[in-house]
Every structure is written in C-alpha cells, then in structure tokens.
Image (cartoon, helix red, strand yellow):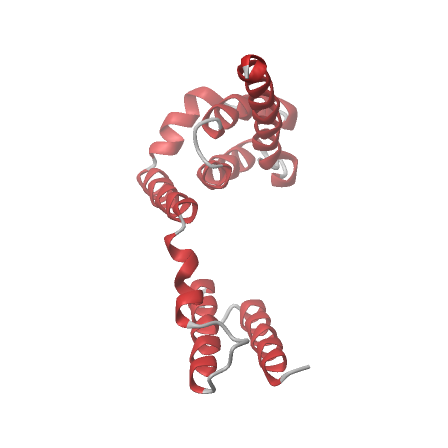
Length: 170
C-alpha cells in the first residue's frame, strides 16, 4: 500500500475514535478530516489524495442542497412546536403500537410523496418520541422508515406504469 492509503486509513481510524468518544460534533470531525486529507495532499503534491476542487465538488449538487434546506425547514417546524401542533390532531393518542403505526402511515407517506424521505423521517422523530412517552410504547416498535419505504415502492411502481402508458405511442 502507498503512504496515501496508510494516511487515509489512519484518518478514518481517527474519525471513528473521535466519533465513538463523542468528543467533538460530527460535522467538525468530518470537515476537519477532509481538510486534513486535502492539506496533506496539496503539501505533498499527491495525485491520490483529494484536491481542493474534488473536496468541494459535491457541495454544489442540487440534491444535497435541497436536503440541506429541508433540514433547516424541519428544524424550524420542530423548534417552534408547529410539527407537534399539526401532527397531534391527526395522530391522536394511540394505545397500541399497531394503532400508532396506522395513524403515522398517512401523514408520513403523504409528505414523502412530495419531499425527500430523510427530512420527513427527521420531522416525525420528535412526534414518534412524544407518542412513545405518552403511550408507553417502545420506540423500536414505531420504526418510522417503513412507511417511507412503502411510499417509495408504490412511487416506483406508479412511475413505471406511467412510463409504460406514455411510451405506447413512441
């Protein structure tokens, strides 16, 4: 292995150690590691370590920016309590895990039809935690990603059907 491979492996081990100890915030650790890799690569004129252009090249990706903006919106909804205010009448006070899942299914699948699944899950995590506390249901029973996966499967089938009907005249 080259020195760049060993150096990268050492950086990854360092990342894991810092993340496991929770001594620094995750974003600081990751940006710091990337900066270290770029700085060493530039100082040693390495072709194997990322250049500055490669390191920041993905930051302009529209998908990344969209998800980032949605996380800002989600944080606002959660911090103001608007999410719980909107979700409370829809979800109510379920007594069992099954009834809670059924009540969560409609708002989660509806929102994930228009938004990326990751912010939808982030938006409903405080709602699920509140349901679990009030109803004494284990959070593992309300694993919220399955409704968004259900939506993804239905959406894939729907788009495949739409492509088939649109292309009949092609």
